[in-house]
Figure 1 (cartoon, rainbow, N blue to C red):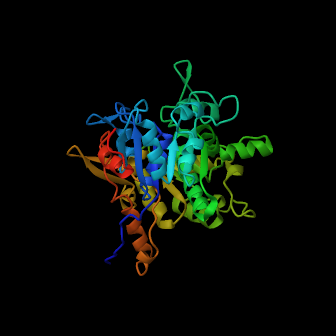
Figure 2: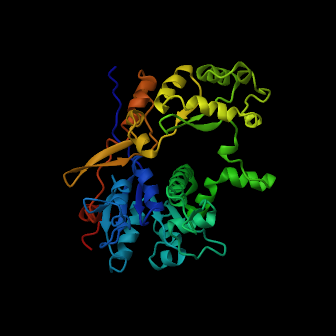
Figure 3: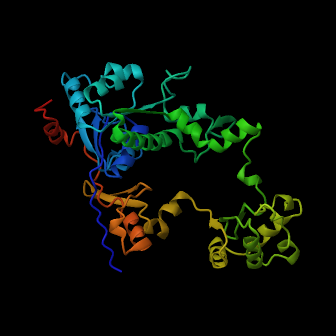
Length: 406
């Protein structure tokens, strides 16, 4: 089947990104992969803060190589006499401006929303703060992990007699704030284009981290209890170990799934007959005391994880081998969905993750159906350029802005 999908990027919003480190660059990264023209305004010595963050690839910070592909770099010191002129020109050029400074710093730099909306009344101004604008924590300096700490997303572990973060913990707020900011920007662009004029989008990293815990917060706010841990769900929504030390998650909580599961594992008839299906599903919580979990574990211990994958896939029940992220990113499934992409940088191939979102013209998919959609989604990052060198696009951008030199 020869599917012709137009991969040329439609003109997206023009974005001037003054932010540094993670949340703002995550937002502009999401937008550039959806077609936005993003200019990053960077410090002429250390860039946007991601260029010199370990780990490194050929001397470049991998945060930069992963978050900045497809952007254009304008290197300009905020102390330069040309700074106010360039800021005004960028505000007039842009559909969107992203700022990550505290309000007092933004005002000092002329990047506050009042100043920029005066330059361009149709501007969408996106402010990403650490802890919000109001409240006793609003003035706190924000780094990724301390925002998570105040949001309650870190489950501490004992490390040599002192509390510490779990080894595999990754910050939540800094990434989620960028995703939420991009979502807010597109909502604001729609409002503007419907005649609403300029818009101000605000998201705090702290609120983004807290919103990630929505199951916990909504459960506690309404019942006074904690949301149940996955490990307490029961024998039919649980993780089991295979003979090779690897693990599988099984979820045969509906009657037809449970019966197929029991048949596949060769469980006794009385176990197969157990279940209260009046509510549609049974997680097996009532049968843990009867030894059901141990019985299932004994069966899983007879084969390797991959052997069980073959067995359970044939009987069509909800299950998953428990992979680590290395296995997931290297899987054939990841390849089929275009999860990773690559570009040449200094003569070497850099591999970076793509956005999980694709947008494809419906007209381009006529006649190709879901096969065409899968192909379009798989190639969603093919047109993204490499990450820019610091200040690489100065001359090009200044010409667009009508400025001779800085």
